[in-house]
Length: 310
Image 1 (cartoon, rainbow, N blue to C red):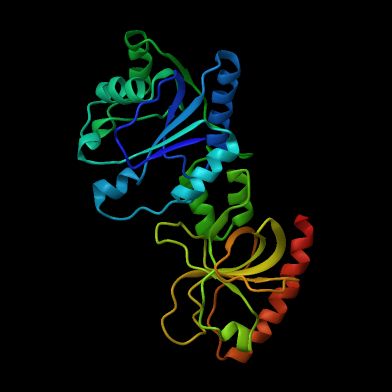
Image 2 (cartoon, rainbow, N blue to C red; image 1 turned 180 degrees about the vertical axis):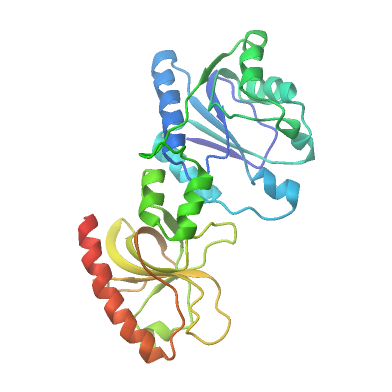
């Protein structure tokens, strides 16, 4: 996959099948649209291309950071996994913020992206004040000589439209099983293992500590059954998402994982931590000994539940 980021000066030379969106989470709705693009690629021979922004537009417009289910690097890995040919992360600056919808189509989608086909969901909006929509894309298709396809929304078993907002609600509730169902894969956090306060190694259990970027949208704080991948090897684990309220001092919000049946040094290594099931909310204990007793119970429970997923 060709990855184009942090530049407005690019040109795709070959005709492409283009879609536009944040693609936060690459959930089942996104996957339906991307499958349609790949089917069109089989028919027409054009490569697939995604146009998105390097930061969420609401972050730029409101000045308040908007969290994302998948970071830019995680989104990039997701799109590579889906077999997408081009991923463009365009800078969301004042020029593009105020760009007229037709100019966005003519100069960027048709111009720089070289769209021979444009694919979107039925709620597509673009351009200044989100004034561009599906009707405009259909109307402009003849003028700019591209084909246009609309892909219907994907719904869950209750008939509710699958969206990133819906997934965020499930994550906030700690309903990780439902969130994973909507995503079509296990919600995950990636990162490099960092040194912690070493209390775990001395008094509790040795853990691998990840400190996700502030932009990463985390689920309800608590203990989760997890699957951990490191250097191609997979381990079961117990993961606490939160700020470790029992430990004195100010602790950054992190993702702290105890891996079953692992021996060795994880510092500096890249981990992928997938959340499988929610065990209990994070809580403050009266002492380290009380926390240790609870963790003894949690580990047994996580090991039991982990086997149900394998």
